[in-house]
Image (tube, rainbow, N blue to C red):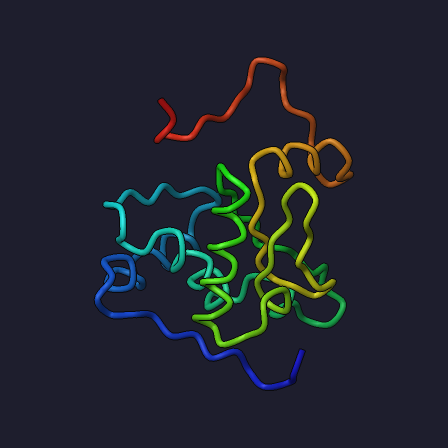
Length: 148
């Protein structure tokens, strides 16, 4: 990756972009936030960019600091790969460099990528082997709000 600072632009026509300062403040103050909005409001593409703008992600890690990945799940492989391509395009970076994806049979991430799009199954599999993840109780589960 180049040493040129990442230029992050937010399309002003999107509701999430219009409320970016409020969302950034909430992300800065709370470990977990819930953002609700209509389809097409920019939640999927703009929230990872807001996290990058806040200084999150491997590319923003300071020397000696543990570099952390921004995880972003999508329910299907095609959604994970197409959203990663879209965000990388908006950031004007090659796919896999800053934003990439990992789905079954395909991994398009550099070792220094900051945003990782993945399916729910990949996230679950990685939590089983990541020593930084704490085990969850068997009764806990996650569901997509748009699941039938």
